[in-house]
Length: 130
Image (cartoon, rainbow, N blue to C red; front, side):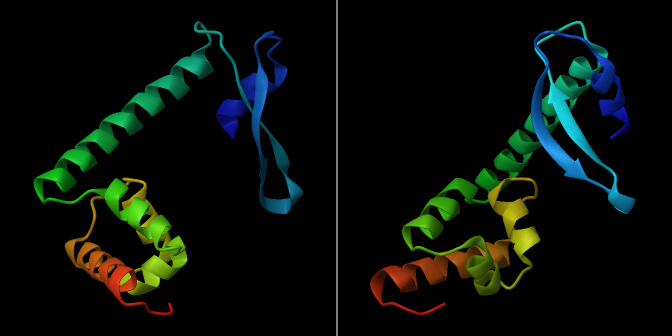
């Protein structure tokens, strides 16, 4: 949270709280954002967001070339009333890994995708307690 130290003392009128954090040994604090486009911290945050968006678009492109849509899997999971934890068990991966697939932080693993689609089809047409 070193980058946030500048924000702690900043008097920018557009500054607002975006979150809280708890650290080691009882350290905790507040995360800020603002609308000041000249602020170095704001510029760094926007650059990081742009990089994240670019990476997500690359992952979407890789998935679409393989005929995979993370949004489709997420929608079908919600339609079936399943949690991400349950889908991770079905897919045979950790909940964190499944979450990164569904939120497009990692390209979908073909085997996990296949298991998830098969389970959704089974739930839709037959039923199955997960």
